Amino acid sequence: MKTSISLALATAISVALTSVAFAAPPTKTGTTAKGSVLTDTKGMTLYTFDKDSDGKSACNGPCATNWPVLKAEASDKAEGGYTVIARDDGSKQWAYKGKPLYTFAKDQKAGDITGDGFLNGAWHLAQP
Image (cartoon, rainbow, N blue to C red; front, side, top):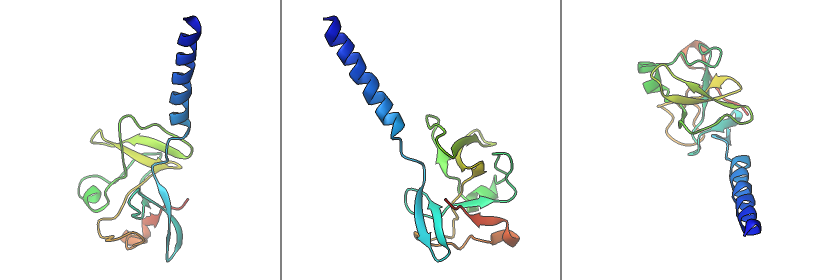
């Protein structure tokens, strides 16, 4: 009886560790006219904002309407270069290498990069 319980426990731990070890990153890599960029799971280009600092988003209110955040769930965990930051409204957002990630509302399809250089160069393509 002890052996079957130990085996079941070992199997459960192994499955749990495997799912954690192979958790998918919150982004993918896509190709644009300007080279490789990070994208969301739908292939939409991700951007960073110069006014963000120390893993804190400066893009709130109307800014966040035009630059939707790459949302993180409460259960999401930091991994590799990815971290989860808290926004002013209490929601969670993914950041890469300390820079919060956003899409751009005017990008219509995967590969669009219309937000690059926006606001006098304050918005940039997020690069892997």
